[in-house]
Length: 257
Image (cartoon, rainbow, N blue to C red):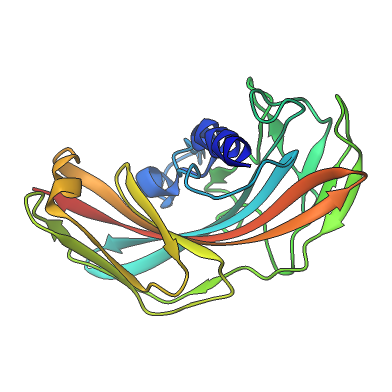
């Protein structure tokens, strides 16, 4: 069991490059007046390596991410829906191609390492299109292949709800730094993160203080504070253990001094 947990955490570390890029590319999502609208594809930076699993054969994660930004002294939020997934036949040593995968009828793109990502692009000509619209519980479809069964499944768990995040916008890297959340519901656990320093805590812990030692590891300049609330549903799909994850992510930018 310990080895399978280690492998599954490693699998999520490999998915780091497959999550949404809101946290570091918010400005790319804000429409600008251009003679001809251009389409911009987001990079993928959200770290999912702290999610906790015991082995399993597949992971399907639906993500709603909200990033706050300041525009002319007014605070705005951008919310984007996306999805990632991965499947294995060797206890997460590698991923396998499981055929076509979609979430809410939106196709995920197979990556070079055989993981899957919904490739969201902002298009100024269609500013209301902000990724997958999770109006209901996410519905997944997997065509199957390489030992992964074909299945269709709608999750029975809700997306977590989160209150506003709070924390100083300017951070002294030689001091402790506290991030707080107004409230959290329907979550199994939380991930608090500043830049690439992160920690997983129970969903009841509505604040976390990064120590001065933890902050000292973060480079100066602009950075991201992010809190992820997630809920996990374990299912049996034709004898394979598939985990379905609903995540809600909130983030804001800070300056590390």
